[in-house]
Image 1 (spheres, each protein chain N blue to C red):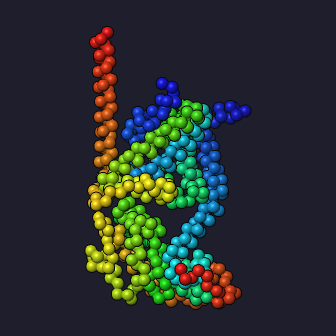
Image 2: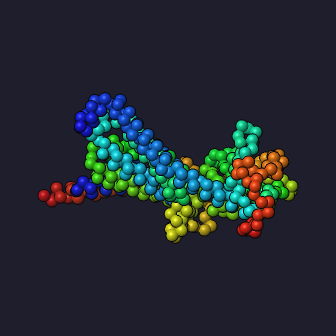
Length: 224
Length: 224
């Protein structure tokens, strides 16, 4: 498997930030009351992941081991602040919706994790791809988690998506009439519950795939 | 030369860290310089929009955003009052009011009060209530906040939610948020009543130097 394909697979599924690495739990649990909020947080994080990946990779031969963590923190907080200011100035409507989430990105240790584990050892191109894929994987995970909580909690899906993405995306908004909802799922405990069940479901899928793989291997051995 | 410099810095992690801190600060400073004017413009637009909404039913021919007076709210905080004028006479005021905590923290309202002491309109400026439950106080999601229009301390209104024997609906599954908003609007009206003399003082605004302006300016768009 080529390196790029490996990186894409890792980010989206095998080593997914939320379901694989279990990183970035604070923003994950805090912002997934609805699928739209999860999408917003995911998009903002993706931008920061790509920027920090490229920067850390560019400076990988300059940064001394002893101070690397401090330098990563400096770089990331600067990127987050710059993204915040840029969005506030030129994407003001989006900033009003996402503004709440942007400072939260600083506490997402997935960004630190990718800088330390990947970007600091690779060239900028592949580091950017890794940041992008990790970001998309994170976004998808947050959308699924937010979608599950929102659907069970209040019987809607992508409510207010048009406020985040513009009126053209109003078709995304679904509503189940006459459904009273389970308030618990929107409140913080619901985040832990939904995350637990989703992680369990993924583990089950992985275990099944493993059993199937070992079975076919066993057949091959038996047949030989 | 550059390899020499970076090689030297690698030997001195303290210096390296200092260099990065300097670089990041420079970047942030530059970002601030570039975006500051634009952000200020956007914020002025936001303020104008909020004032347009809350003072829509108050006839005025000035720009309330430019006609301000700061009033001491008692607890060490000053509140900026935006004054709407019709032909030089104050026809209403609007101000931001930080209410007691809702479910997710303080709720900031923009309150428009007509000359007779009745609410012109109230809008929520910022809140962090539970999405899907408490956020129905936002006019983009529900018309609930319009229930305050036209009410005052002298209109026989019971300033509480129905559950507490008042005149305002609570939301299914959420009482704390509407209770906090009703309390905050009530408080803001009492603040207005206590400060009425000073707010409506006929002297021309000190901030905008409008003394020379003719008293009878033709009304434009004031019928809205």
